[in-house]
Structure formats: structure tokens, C-alpha cells
Image 1 (cartoon, one colour):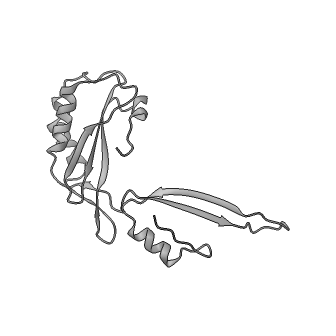
Image 2 (cartoon, rainbow, N blue to C red):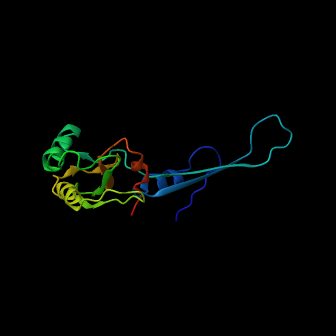
Image 3 (cartoon, one colour):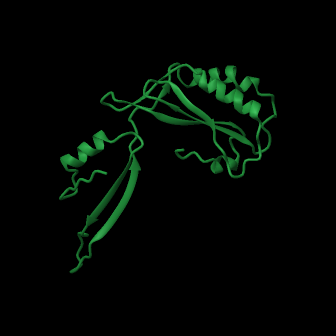
Amino acid sequence: MKKAVAENDMLSPAQKEDLATADVGTTISVKVRYIPDNTLSHNDDKAYDFSFIANPENDASYLGGQEQLYSYLAESAIDDIPENSIDGYNVVAIKFTINEKGEVVNPHVLESAYQGFEDEAIEKTLIEAIRKMPNWKPAAYTNGTKASQEFVLFVGNLKSCLINTVNTRRD
């Protein structure tokens, strides 16, 4: 764990360096300690803490664009799923990663605590379509460093409240 301190409200060179070199997915914790500037005769120290995850400035993208991605998924999987086979509030979530080379890796079904729908044939069709997907343009920082990026594909009732119960956090 790295720690860098600034003496005022401006980032120090060490803080800037740490932010610029943080790995994708790294949680950056920020702790701000300050004395309020107001007309009170005595001001207690105040604190403001927050964190965020370092993400590349440029997301991974399907080489043909969104419309081509939708076409690929429709032709390779969605059109092969019988109509009304994912009914009601059911949804299937497939998580996958686009690695630094733009390759699809680790596609798998995400589970929900409330998931009532299970159809191995549909899940297999979706996973195979994602596994065979052409390479993407990988995520990248502005300095050109490539990075992995995770995605989740939802299929089914996209207005379903069950989408919020799917564990989309890092596995």
C-alpha cells in the first residue's frame, strides 16, 4: 500500500505519481483533513474520506461499434434462444473480461440469490457466443497502457428488479 501526503489543497507530486501509476481496478482511498475557514473563534479539525477505483480513460470497445456488437450477439446467440423461454422477471447475466490483448476471457454465469430461472442450454449458448467473439480494442490509459476490463451481458427482462440482485462485483 502506498501513501502520499500533501500540505495543502493541491495534490503533491507523489500523489500525482501514485494516481498516474495505479493499476486498473485499484481502490484509491483519499483522506482529507482540514480546519474550516469561517468566522468562528474555534474550529475543530474536520475530516472527509472517500474512495474510488482507478479505471482507464478509454473503455474497451467492440471493433465494429455497438451496433455490430448487437448484431453479432443476435446472430450468434439471441436469435437461437426460443422466444418466451426467458419469461416473467427472469434474467441471465454473463460476466466476462476483455484482457489487455483485447481477448475475451473467463465468461461465466453470474448467480442471483433470487434467481429462479436456470436453463443450461441458454446459458451455454450465451457463453459460447461470448467466448467466440472477435477481439476487442482493449481498455487503455491516455499514456497507451492497455488494461483489462470487465463487462456483464444481461439477457431477459431488462426491467426486472432481479438485475439488482445479481452479484456483479469482482469474483
